[in-house]
Length: 194
Image 1 (cartoon, one colour):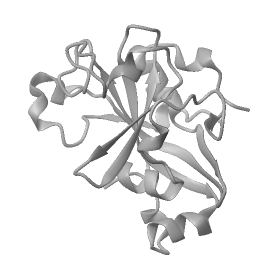
Image 2 (cartoon, helix red, strand yellow):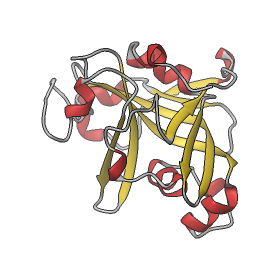
Image 3 (cartoon, helix red, strand yellow):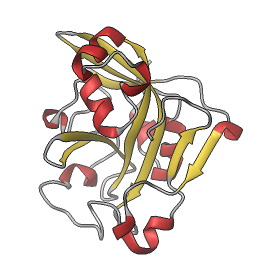
């Protein structure tokens, strides 16, 4: 069952934690790929100097973040890798959750071809890797995750004691925000990013 709009229309820290265990699905002409979410990072444009939308900065790039939750915010980093974020909360609150790692569960052969590797732990263990494996590109910017061919399926929640909370990765420039414990990962998962 697809996650509903109500699931996304809540604050970023609540949704980020509850995304663990959900399944990202992408239906393409090449086939279906699915990955269980095992690592995410939260970003809040109102207070978080690591967020693209800080301080509530509305630009062409960040526009989708200011709408209601349940839409994809996809951007290019280093001129070559796409990153997928999920817009959360209600209109006017620029909050997103970066998908950092997935556990591949379906369409693994297609993921291997897209990634050019047979190593299953390397397929989705990073934001750029998972978008490549799942066939997600800048064309998915603004995609409604409540309809269409790219969406989240509900899955068993990760138990509280299995959730690791740490600082986010590669945001040393973000002053006090680099100390926020806004990275959530499933403990002991071999599929999290390195």
